[in-house]
Length: 141
Image 1 (tube, rainbow, N blue to C red):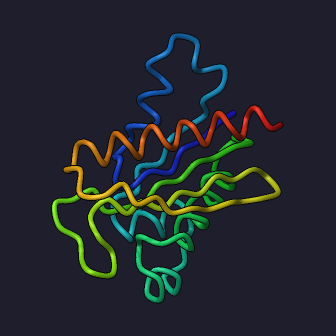
Image 2: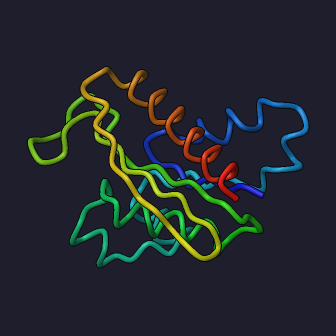
């Protein structure tokens, strides 16, 4: 079973999975945690982690993915937190998206720099990358 923990994609990964008939056999639930408060309340992301690293960080992506596993019946969870734009900053530019992919015993994180593609394209790129991470994880088990 799969769970998703999404911020900047707002549920796009869950929607892509559930667009397929029969997806209830593999999809448990999705968490859309757009605010820091939602990340803390629903996924147990630490306020200290958010304060030290910021919402767009591999550390938060890790805690989001682990939280999705802990608060679901899933064996695999993917998390996404990023800056879809417009905007960003010198330290966290538009198009930076952090991902976590967790199983019950492990979590890997990575950051992709999609660039200033525009909000819609960054979100689509993040959705597609998350789906690819899920497929790779499923195929490796």
